[in-house]
Length: 236
Image (cartoon, rainbow, N blue to C red; front, side, top):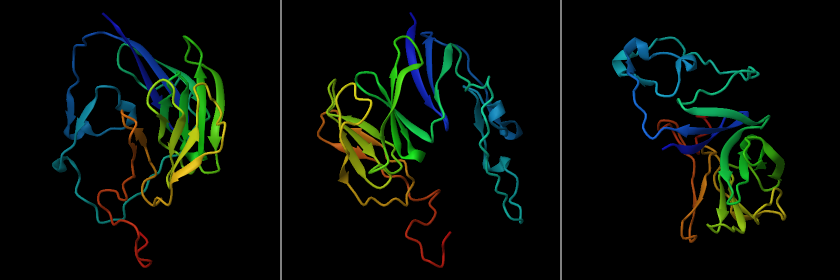
């Protein structure tokens, strides 16, 4: 018997919803690429591809300066879509968003998206039986929002009264009732003066009993580099 699965995917400038009928059992597996075969780029990537790179597979370090090769943003080709496992399909839901990072679904089915780069929370109402939104509104933007990321509805259950939003430097909340596509009041700051020098991803989760709010603080380092604050004579 088949089961319906809904997978929500968020990319730098688009949101896609993946809907599929997944067989109860799937057979077959992909071999693990090793050694030189494990090197490659996104053009060889697809669901199920696995790579194993060991220290001995890497070239010796060169004495010259490392090369920085940052990516550029280009227009997405008309026929470009993320690859999905067999049995899944994917459709474009929205485009033109600025730095979407997190998707949360309200109890009534509305979809909330944190556009971290533009300090915005956007709300979509999905049309029944369609991947296309019937409505798209800016729920909240600017003001007390600063690099918003996490979104949580409180209290747990079918009728939340607040939306909690995790900023890079604070935790705020906004009065909410089912069906709101725009905030009906100004947000209030619950926790402030959180150091923003760490990674900006601040997720928010409400405990199942509704008694606790969990707020994640991004790591202050990459692979245990020196943490902030740094001496003025050592900026990097």
